[in-house]
Length: 312
Image 1 (cartoon, helix red, strand yellow):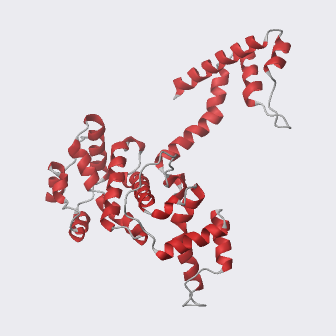
Image 2 (tube, rainbow, N blue to C red):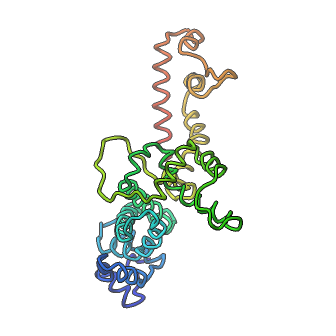
Image 3 (cartoon, rainbow, N blue to C red):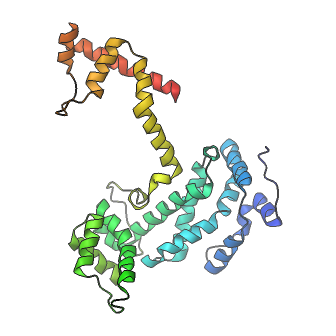
């Protein structure tokens, strides 16, 4: 099959020659949203052809076509974050950055559509932008607190919806609801109350935060379910194989003594969780020095890694 997509419409032909010509500036948000919603969607064959061309030659027009055809996805995702008081245009712009990162890393040979792969990157970029522009995040420095920051609003709304029939005028959380939220999100009830006060008050700072050099955490790691994200699925399958068939295959490449040493040192767990035999125990059994056992162990591990590398 040719890597050059067939032209389906004048708009698609324009996207191939100059993809960005279809998209106006974000300065006029309504015009921008209208325009991106009119951009034709790519078929799977077209998407695969553009992605292959990008990976093979670095073709910027192919990259542009992939990005432009998915701008409507960014608009859709960004709407879910309007409640944080940040401009919709800024959220879209940050989401577009995530989309471009996804296009750069997208592998069409994995058998998934770009739309599924890109959602992860778009959300991650928007989350990071929100964290950098909310002054309260100076207080929310732990993973649990950041998880609370992003989940409290939706969870509180679900509770209010459930209780609406009983009390349509109540706007604050009950003690029971606070306790339930704290337990679900694994934080202190005082933290729930503090975050609720800040969210209700709309305490927003739009000035950029400076990098303080502390370790940063990608919000998607604890906000999203990565179990179906293509990259995570492939990595999980590889880990499962290494932990099972991979280890067995690598052990088969060893002689009996080397295999016994590796199994005792790394794979055996006794009932008291103390592990297998020590270097000195094995040295006494084989009548050699502990250093010799260590050398055999090192050589065996190298041989196992080599065997696994040949099967990767």
